[in-house]
Length: 386
Image (cartoon, rainbow, N blue to C red; front, side):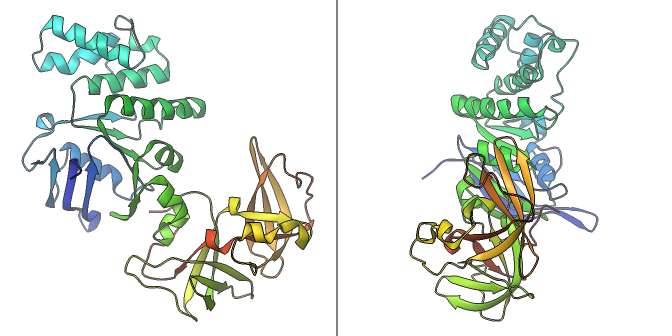
């Protein structure tokens, strides 16, 4: 049986009439990197503060290392926390910051110094014990904050948007460092973020949170390629969203027809309650920009390769509205010819269509098996709101 370091059982937290955490139950495997991803106001910080013991649930229980935390104050829990602001003591040296928790536990000076030196070595800051924190870069201060938490050997390390205050290049580098540190120490990390890139890159498991509940818990790959609800499909990664009604069923595929008559074929995704769309139902299809392929003629589309096993993958016509250059990647923003709906296609910089022009008429298609379709109603609402 897999060991579990954190288990939440029917957690409920209200603030007045607002339900911040709604009867939530989940478990986090020992030694894993578990991220809670969601928009502002979804309840993720409230959940983290309950795990830390800063606020108590109205009902339910939290177990850490198999032990109930009911009535256990924050300073008695086997957890430590890293905040976005880091909360380092500016009047203390790096070594004194890392040793602070050890000193409060009554660990002797010689043992403290040995533990601090070993910890700074492990986080890539050897010989930094005597430096002031304001002498360090943002990434180095981040590692000091993590060292200060890990030196106490917590069961859980809780991280509340720790990269949010860093600039883009440093944030990208720290994502790699955080993942490497977690793997090296084997400590269970519970990470809060609204940034889907952080969650996908760092995590073994991701919980997508919306309105106090988890919409889906799974690997980054499962969330990206097999979203369980419209909310997850709309929140995780870029997606083209097409709304209409189911006009036909083809086994595991459905045709979604927009009010203007545009037909999009996609893989049927059952709702969490098992409900599947029927002909006539309102439905929403999601198509990722990278699965769509452009062509100037039908022969360019190479449809059997695009849609293996489905020679009838629909071909759509569009007009180039704008070309979006973004360094290593670009995108073509199209208007579908019939509905005038916006549709985005990812475009490799070195591709044969790098010379596309605004107002040029093109064809596009995608493998229906790589798009998803949900019945509308009773699920999430998509997008990044909360």
